[in-house]
Length: 214
Image 1 (cartoon, rainbow, N blue to C red):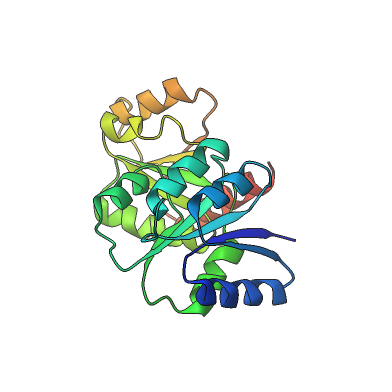
Image 2: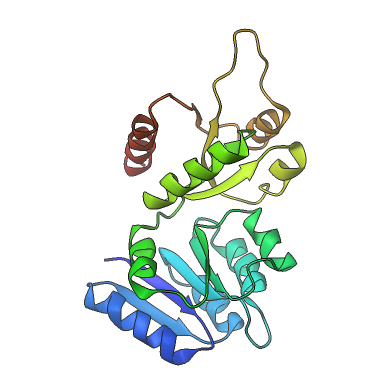
């Protein structure tokens, strides 16, 4: 049985979503304030957090940052009517499962939550933007959270993260590792690093097997 933490000051929406998740046999805890969500995250193990962005007091981005300090392996989905906000961009750089614009259709949201993987953050290292976007979409469909790191500065944002794996483009013969990957290897000496194969399905299956065997 999986467990979800739903943080939203729109109580009717959160309770409706919680009821659907409970009907599927899982647990769902609804809270309307960030400090209460933080308190619960420090005492209970949740598989995923869903949070609204705009709330009185502690907003969604602030809540994610505080909660990640006590539970860095938690998968996070943010819903917002303002996807370009600076604070939201800051937590994007630390890795989210998804940012969804309002209004959010419940069926795909439920599917996203029920497939979310704890400790499933994958760093996409110095890939082509279009390729990374395709990879991120496919990885999210398997429950993995994603973050891109195309520079050392990007990599440094992940210093407090709990990375599951890094994914790098194939290197040419004699080509050295990129700086972002070298930084991450130094920060996370046991981090598994996968090179992108031609066959995306093979990569996804390999990542799933590695995560499931943990």
